[in-house]
Structure formats: C-alpha cells, structure tokens
Length: 300
Length: 273
Image (cartoon, rainbow over all chains, first blue to last red; front, top):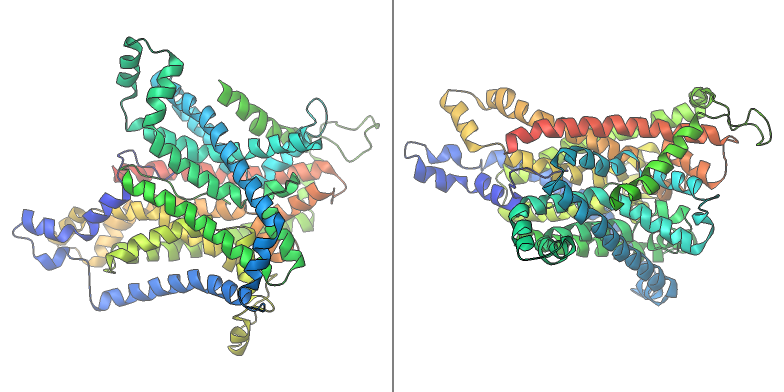
C-alpha cells in the first residue's frame, strides 16, 4: 500500500533529504550552505525528546517482560521450561509449516494472475487490485466467522474435520497474504520488461508454463521473498483465525500458557518478538540488496 | 482464473453468507415457516444498548489511537528524517517500526500485562506516582494499540516526508516565506492527503483488531470484535441473525475506511513521483 509508482526507494530518498546539503552547495554557488543543512543545535533538542519518548515506548514493555520472566527461579528457568515443553516446538513447527504452505499457494495463485493482467488485461488491473485490498475490509475475525458458518454444513463440511480445518486455515491465511503478495509481485513485474522477456522466450519456442517458471519467476525472486517474509511474520503468531478453527498453532499456544503459567508466558512473548524481529531483519536485508520498495507492515 | 475461484470460495462466499444471514429472520426455530424470511430486524437490533455501546467503544478506541498514534508517528518520522538526528537512528527506527507494527496480538498484550498489569514490573513505580492503570480499561487497550499504531504511521508517512523536496523549501525561502508560511502553504497541503489517509488506515487497523483486546482483557471489554468473538464461541445473543448484522456493520465501516484511504493515497502519490 505504500508502493510508489516511481520506484522511489526509501534508501535513495533518504540520501537526498539528509545529505542534500553538499550536493546543493556544489550545484548552486549562490546558495548559503546553512539554508540547506538539516537544522542542528537547539531545534533538534525537541526532536531528541520525541525520539527518546518513542524509544521508551518501544523498550519499556520489552524490558518489563524480560524482567518479569527473570522472576522465576533459577534464572532463565522460564525459558528452559518453555523450550522443554513439547507443545512449544510442535505448535511453532505447525505454524511455520502452515506459513510455508500459505506462501507457496499464494505465489501459485498470484504470480500467473499478476503476469497475465500485466501482459494481456491491463484494463482489469484496478479490479484485481481492488480484490487484493478486500482482506483489509474483511478483518480476520469476520473472515473466520464467515468461513466457519459457510463450511460447517453440507455440501462442504470442512470445519468438522482436522484436515478440513487445516485447509480452511491455510485458505484464510492465503487470503490475508493477498495484499502483500500481490503488491510485492506487481512492483517486481513493474521493474522488469515483461513483454520483451515473454516475446523473446516465446520466439525461442517456450510455452506459457516455461515462460512463467523459468523466466518470470526467477526475476521476481526478491519481490516474492519480501512478500514471503511478511506473510510468515503475520502467520506464525496469528491468533484469531487459528483459535476459532481450533488449530494447534503458535498463537493460540501463547494464549493457552498465558492462562496456566506465571513466568513462561513472558518468555514465550519475548521469543515471539524475537521471531518477528528475525523475519523483519531478513526482509530488511533483502530490501537493502534490491532497489525496490518493500512494504513492511501488516494489519492486525 | 484460479485466483478468482479461490477468492470467491474463501472470501466472497463467506462474506456473502454473513450478509444474507443478516437479512434473514433466524430468531425462530428452523421448522417455523417464518425462519429465513426477509427482515431488517437484525439491523434495528444493533441499537440495543449493549451492541451500540460496543460500536461506540470500538470507534472511540480506534479514533484515539489513530489520532494520537498518527501525530506521534509523524513527529517521530520527522525527527529522524528532518530533525537533524544522527543518520543511523533513521534506519534503526525504520527497522524497529517494521517489527513493532507487526508485533500485535497475544504477545503484545502479555508484554503490557507484565509491565503495567496488576503484578507488572512498572506498576509499583506508577502507583508511587499516583497513576492507577486498570489493565481491563479502554485506556490500557489504547496504550497497547499505540504500540503498533505509531510505528505503522512512521512506516507509511516516511516516504511522504522524503517526498518533500528541498527545492520547495528553498523556493519559498527565496520568495521570503517564513518557516511557518512554508509549512502552512507548501508542506502541509502537500502532506495532508498522506497524513489523513494514513490516520484513516490506522483507524481501520485498530477497528479490526481482535487478538490484542481479547488477550489483554480476557474478552471482558465491550468492543465489536469481542462481541463477534462471543457470537462465534456460542450464540451469545440467542439470534445468529443479529451476529451477522453485527459483522456486516463492521464490514461497512471498514469498507468506508479503506476506500477513503485508497482514495487519499492516490492523491498523495502525485507528489511522490
């Protein structure tokens, strides 16, 4: 949603705004250097205060949680208990697996669609974009409500069985991933010359599948990875949908031990935060290597 | 296209199911001939004090966190981009905002409980300062929501602030404009669609949130998403039709919100090319 058509990357724009002084001095001899420098001195004191409030807001809950987890004796025992709990590993593995399947399904659905729309049906682009925005209009709580009611009776009693519930869970997550995946792929397609690549491959005898798998797909790696990490960050800790479908996922597990344990929930919360941090860190790494703009926030 | 079939099956049909149910009389037994007949009763039932209150509370919480988070997020983004703070703080803030805006739900609620809850680490300090924070209150929920609201503001508004070109400032200074005039007549009007659009998005972000509220208050706070939670768990209202109407009311508010956001974002992008 934050994609800018010009492909203006945050990084390059940053260098324009904060390092602009040297360049403008060089290009405009008459310009007083002071006028283009970012304001220093007394003015930035206010901005330091703003920044420090933000810093406190960010770290205090984390420090509080950490201190709370340290109340259990001996030190770090809360973490030991969590890691030893077989359910911890099982639910985390389950959520991770669901996340991977979600990403694969989402990729298979989105890439050919975005490719086809770009190449043959540009008229449809606003409509497809509208559809991919729908998950923001239908929040997870409404989506799962509708899914449960639509698929608990005939002709598709999916919500009644384990397998069916897994299917519904993945389907719901795929829907949630649409806005991020579509945007990532669309931005990726914008940066390559889809038409020439396709025509070149076809003139060499490639069919549609070959074009997609061997030409378009490799060119979208970076975009897909960014969409994938964001999807993973959202899916692994997701609570609302998983809990109503009664899935043994990581989000409901955190809530469950929150009800029965004292210090372990603090440990799990921090671990969960660490996982988000890793996913976002990897996303940032990809972003730094590519010139493309990457969206890095989800909805809740 | 498989994409459209998938969307139809797992997004459109479920929503349509709720929508059609919201116009049916489901209060009577299934063998009653009136069962399933068209009615607007479910929607007029939303004016029941309990349900109306849940909407008001949801709107209030979303509005407060969107405006406060929006203002603070903007100031924070401005501080690191234009405020003359060291450059590395900017990338640190952006990374942190990516993490924090995705750090919602149960772990966030727990982090707040352990910090300022009944036996929280900072609670004795707050009490000594005369601050008594009830973790089940709207204020506590708003504080928790702000944890992901203002980072989201930072993420979305930063490119817009970057888009404020040096030339515009220089041009207005050359024509003798004061800093205030530059802001009043140049920067603010350019940023306005972005600011407004993002605040609206934050509103929707808070309005649709369920996990954080559920985990923080144990499902005791009366907001729309928690009402729907009760409705899914068991038929809390003894009438599924009202539950569907409740859901559709939420969809309607979200549709207006996201529509306004998309519109404003399109306007804002004109300046970012």
